[in-house]
Amino acid sequence: MAYPVPAEFFVVLSMILFVMGAMGVVLRKNAILVFMSVELMLNASNLALVVFARQWQNMNGHVFVFFVMTVAAAEVAIGLALIVTIFRHKKSINIDDLHQMEG
Image (cartoon, rainbow, N blue to C red; front, side, top):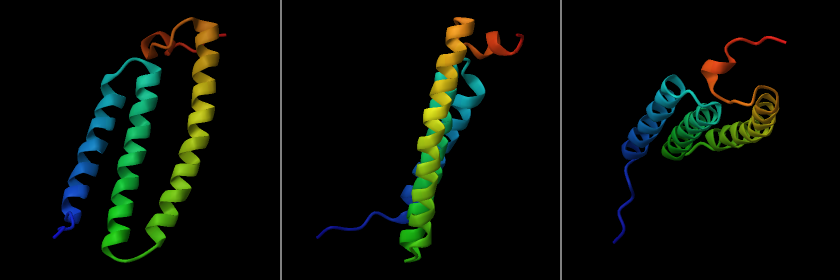
């Protein structure tokens, strides 16, 4: 007999993933790793939304997650294009090297 996994486990997993993403944003110096950490934070919040929507039998959370994933996909495309453009001009994606936005 299969036992369903309690929602609390998914919420704890979501919290752990979000904290890992926040630590990656604060501690990393590479723009791509910071970008990936932001995506990890978005996915952690999506996991929490899906868990709560499933727990309360409400489809609004699933619809909201769909829109968040759509915006995240657009963010990935624009963000990577910006990172590639910055790399072409500055020859570095180290955030400490990019703090001076000079022409």
